[in-house]
Image 1: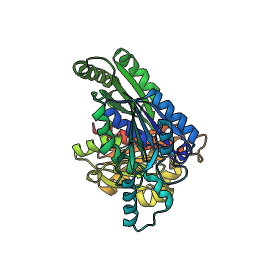
Image 2: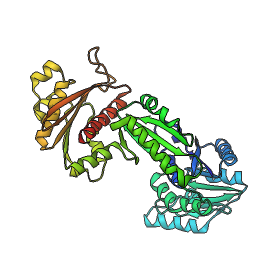
Image 3: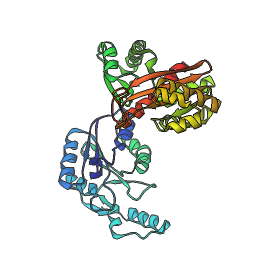
Image 4: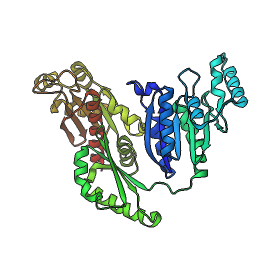
Length: 411
């Protein structure tokens, strides 16, 4: 079966809101053996949504609409779907009663426009939404499964896992997608593809996807051949092994976990701890580390020493060193890592200092110049990075390359 996702809302076409729901829905569908063939973002315009939804029905057996189920004038998903499917919209007394109880429970007056959330297309099954006011809806139409889901992620995700996937599995029995997911750090997308394309191109029963973001490259190998149970496992295992031989330590995961999870797992396994001293990254390295639950077992803490004064007074980096070499230098990066390691009593000290931009660069030290430092009981060392991209990209790549350096040290 083919699936399409339609994300609905004019705010998703602005620079202020990202569609992350479709990523979660795609992941859940993939686990059920269903590929998503198309995703569309459409604004709150009746004619536009009608055209997009009608087209999706022509291509896909499963159509999932996300958003546009609220009480306001621009929430038009129910009306559009009912119009396309030739169904009447009817007041559902049970849904209305639940809405009234919810508003009474939180002591908020229910305005008349909230009643439209209880309007349901004929033949639709209501999907309970204990986390919000808009119920989900499930309809069958000819050979299609149609789902209308609320947009807030904390409402959508439980509805997908608790209701949507069960309804799909009742009607669609297929083996889950068989695939392998390799994650690579500190390498560019083009270099990775150049190195491994001769390998994966020799496997005609495998479809390869490669993508990069913020210094991480993801390689996904999907099995598309026959005899899935007997052949897919051995073939994908062989392919994965050959790719790992080519890329070596750059591969940090075969299960999809993040770089900070992989690094944290090694710190925990080795019984080691780390502390951070950050300048241009502004605490991002520490943030990534502490995104992992349980990171207090190996993260001692960190300092954000953004100014020269804070580097000198908090980390005791000598003012002579700062004056001679500048804050963005190998010497200062090493001193920062060494000092924070000692202050925190950690096994490793990790540091970053650089020019993230968009201002502050010079011909000698341009925007994107960064030094990262790593210190342990044997001493300290540094690495020079020349990173492309805007301020956010430079900071994220710096943080990830610093974590990757620590990960490789722990191998």
